[in-house]
Image 1 (cartoon, helix red, strand yellow):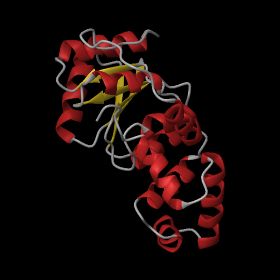
Image 2 (image 1 turned 90 degrees about the horizontal axis):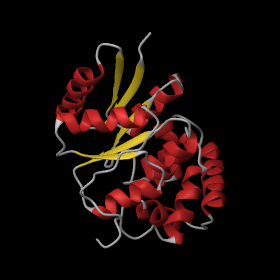
Image 3 (image 1 turned 90 degrees about the vertical axis):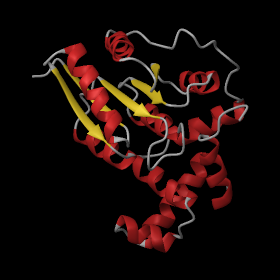
Image 4 (image 1 turned 180 degrees about the vertical axis):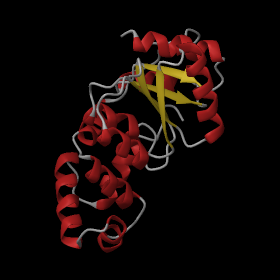
Length: 216
């Protein structure tokens, strides 16, 4: 049995390979690494087993809007620590990652040694944040409320919401997910209630908030 079970969620094969190399060298043969290139693949792996020790999550993943992927994971799998990975390294991105429940943040420009150090710290139950980035302002009350609503969605409701945000009609979403249109209507009603919105436009705007960075 592997000493550590780590899930790498990033849509860039080259960077996934770099992480594989860093973690195999840093943690030894006892580590078991799995990869996901989208939020859908990530959810499938999480549904298969809840025994993950860590998820390394790219900020910009297919199937999510910015921090919505992090918010979804913290809501559905609160026992699994999540470390964000991003090429966006400004202080606002790091601060928002912390506010939305990440256990750390690894800039994509980091050395292999830094990646190993960060992962070891979080596996030991600590947190890890870049030392050269100062803390900045907190997430607004509006964004926090939006994240709480998103965290309460089931993975299927989240999937429906992202499709609504992409402009798909109920009929199209039903076709994509191989369910009835009535099922999608029920999901949309539940999503609106949980998010405290009344229209598809309001729901889409709320989800898009998760992709915006304060000050940008």
